[in-house]
Length: 388
Image 1 (cartoon, one colour):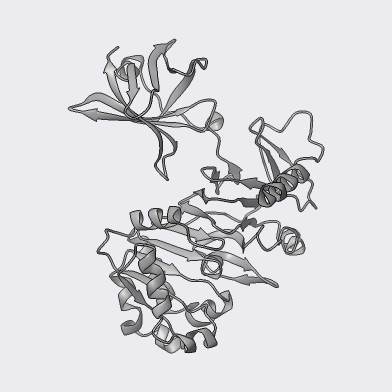
Image 2 (cartoon, rainbow, N blue to C red):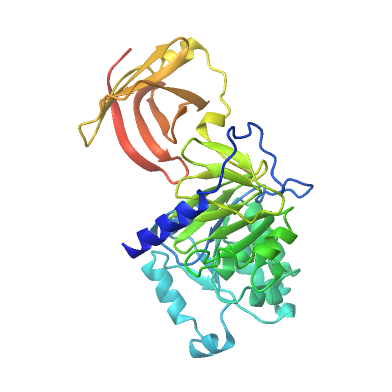
């Protein structure tokens, strides 16, 4: 209850400021100078603010290979005292076993010469997933920045692998991480200043001067038990708390609109699980602003039908009206448009909802209603019972 009250108070304070009568239609934030924000061209990043949840592990395992794959774990952010107390990293190994990741290889050194030795970074070359643990971010860069080990991590991404990090292990992957001062990271996530433990450790305004002094960068504050899955030029929030965004704008969730802030504002807004953000445009993704692929009325008609949920008393009717596919659910809501994102995948025009149609022998047999296609959170799995 106390956590709920704190978050409620925080949200009220964030959105109590005066808004312009008409939010801007085209958003251009103070951070949109010549600095480009984007993730790696290939592969994915899973950046966690603090703590690893089952939700995070599920995503990591999906992109890091099958259950037999060996994961590289880098605990170099630990202090020397912590390592001396557990030199074989038995605690780390037990932790990952409990997370359902039994096959791990520990990679750790304080010696840059060793980090440039092929025999040291060779395990990365055979892996699809790396997990960088928390501690002090400076210890990671001191060991691996501008070394062959850092190059091997980049090559893992080029092989469509995934690099996850928690706390310091996520901050090091950004352009900069914010501690007592702005410090350089590996730049896997470019054009971004990253802050961790954001709400849990009351860091809301600790970094205001850094953010205002470097407003050309996008600044993100990731809270505990929360992370972002970065895929190219977008990221999706994954977790139980929030990600704060400083991009020179204010996102108004209640009416899905965006307005510009003043050039010296340190205000931010919060994104929650399932929200998506366009790094290249520095704007919250919205189904109302999402691009639609062209599809003929004849092609759209293939999706018409009555669909019944497998495990609950819920059904939908999908029908074509004025060359637009519409959906009517059994809860009595007004029919709403669902628009083609790509073949067999549609999105609702008025809410964050996705519909993945399934085929058998080129015939539509069912549809999955999902809140997030990345996290594959299925709200209802339905089978087609009546045709057009």
